[in-house]
Image (tube, rainbow, N blue to C red):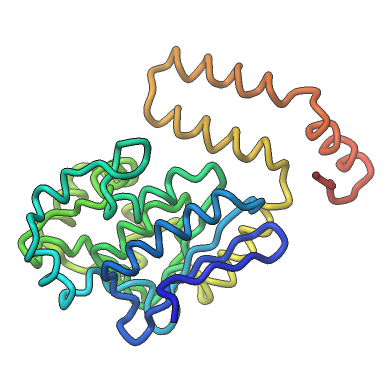
Length: 262
């Protein structure tokens, strides 16, 4: 069975971690499959992505039984190699950052557990919807290591410094409710996959160019200074106003129908 499955319905891509017998624990094959899946979606005509896990959990983290092979190599050298993301990430970071880097919205549907590597993969999504009984943890300290899959790029954008430190120092699992209060989870739903799919379908019905521009602008707003953000607002808006796709949105609004995009 493939470690990750990719399918598409209309313009919504569905990416599912597919190792349910191991609670989707991540081994080297799954790291590779996650990167390949991200690249496959990037090359498709998808307008939104739903990221989920098969079976009883989203992802229980690293498959500890696979660490032996990693530790038998010069792991420090392997970690330092920049192999993806235009020379910015190693292969393990890319498994999470590939979702963050997509120019379309990614919605993670969480259930069971999202621990360690699983949480960092979920952090690559724009939005996280969790089942009420989901447990989440920055689990790496349990094994005497640090979150190193892009977590320290993504976590500080979501939670306060004291929360980040508590999560990192203790490796203690928290509830979905606590995660939502702290900013790790966007919302809680009884059926997170159905909720994520409905949201992805709603987003996929919006102007594709405007959605991509919005994601780009938000990323700039989170990282650049005021002058750069204001310039980006004007540049990206100028590329939308009066163009055929925006005019179709306006026409559809007045006609009280769904817009049709190429």
